Length: 105
Image (cartoon, rainbow, N blue to C red; front, side):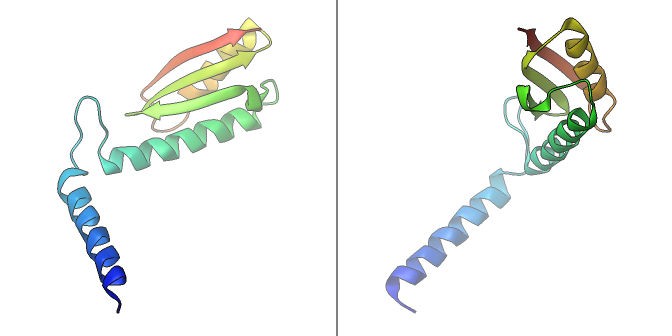
């Protein structure tokens, strides 16, 4: 192996070690690796549920999740759509809360 390849392998090993040692614990402002993965799954499930809801225009609704709390943002056509999106998100398994910041345009 060349010195460059060995250096890259060493750097990757250090990065993985640092992640293993420091990336597993959560803090009030940072998720652990497991929480991040769980939140990614919740976000995907909420997006899918919104996509399956005929009364919602899913491309106009953004979904983010942090520690189980879903944040909805974007624009919808009516107050009913704001309410319905919040209901759909709240019924997804793993969601512990919903912050509905959708705006009627």
